[in-house]
Amino acid sequence: MFAIVEAAGWPIYFLILASAIALGLIIERSIALRSNSVAPPTLLDEVIKELKQRGVSEGMLTKLAKSSPLGCIFAAGLKNIKSTPEVMKESVEEAGRAVSHDLERFLTTLGTIASISPLLGLFGTVVGMIEIFGSQTAVGNTPAVLAHGISVALYNTAFGLIVAIPSMIAYRHFRSKVDSLTIEMEQQAVKLVEIVHGQRIG
Image (cartoon, rainbow, N blue to C red; front, side, top):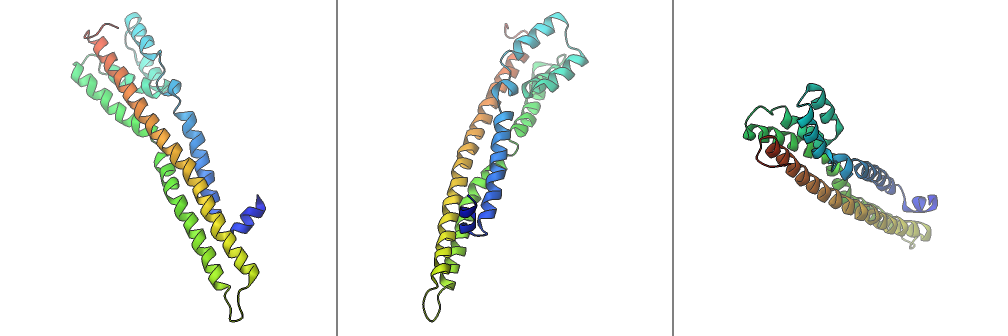
């Protein structure tokens, strides 16, 4: 592995840094965007049950807001439980936008890495080509410098694509995941508002 890095030249270090950041973000988002932790499937039933038994309390709202992103949306709505359904829905929508923004955290960075990695590879290719042309002398080519220039050009191009392709796949996957979770949380929150105000049977 070290021999490949050495053959690829100094431009490869930018791509190694980009790949390390991308890997860290992919692992972090994979953990953070698990459906069960973002929008627990049983949370709505548990909240309705507690509302019927004990009603809304400050302790319940605090616990609910800390439990999960969906719980945070529910807590925002239940703070306005005595208001009209419209006011309650507005508070839910505001909390939903904030939660959605949090779920999208780091995705811009991941998308940027996916976009610039081929450019970093191209930069390495240009550096390699410069070395190749720099090896031209009045006598002829210097084989060692020529070979090194080709290595720099090819390895950087390949590594740029190796970093970019998984990063782009992960970025698209997480964007779709965030959109799905956002829609699911909106539906759950609207259902809670309608049940609280007697517009729907739980």
